[in-house]
Amino acid sequence: MIKVPVLVLSCILASTSFDAPADIYRVVSANGSITLTNIQRSDRKLVRVAREKPLRVKAPALVQVPRESHSTAPRYALIVAQAAFDYDLPAELLHAVIKTESNYDPAALSPKGAAGLMQLMPATARDLGVQDVFDPAANVRGGARYLKRLLKMFDNDLSLTLAAYNAGPGAVLAYGSAIPPYPETQRYVPSVLGHYQRFQADAKRPR
Image 1 (cartoon, helix red, strand yellow):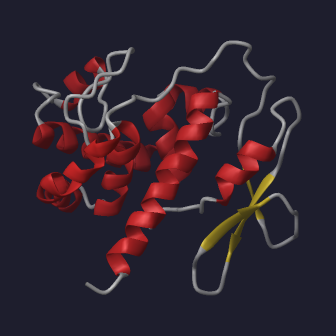
Image 2 (cartoon, one colour):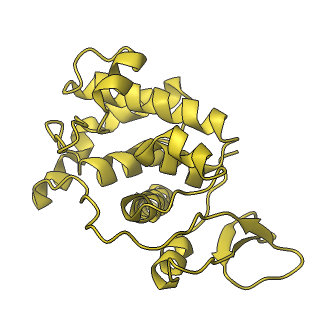
């Protein structure tokens, strides 16, 4: 089972000073839902989020694409569903990553060279065997395969997996298996989780 914290994480991260450590605790309710809080109790498990003094330089922004491109999401529904099935992942998770990474623009290209729907870096794409990063099916399959690999590496912890997808697994490990204190990464993880929860809620609504 993927360990999924809720969007409360974004509020905690946003309201916590980076120059002082902040402990975040995970609460599992009777129905299995998970929330995060900064209030300590004996039945709550500590979640590690790395902290350091804020950088003085502006963090690189996520890829900017046309606002209306979200309407193309249904075009890739079958591609996403197939990749989710092949790699045993929730389709809503793949949609959440795509929404955050490229807003469904298959031609999206970041200043760092990440490309396509799931913004694969060139070296990562080569490692995953993706020859054409701008081919939606190949890109999504590659991104799904990479997410599955990271989930296994981080024991199905979704927060760490997403942090590694954004900042690289080496950065997560370097900070002792915690979300690295990079402003972009600490915005990215709650963003994906928020989209993930909304997609899950949408999927449960009667058609």
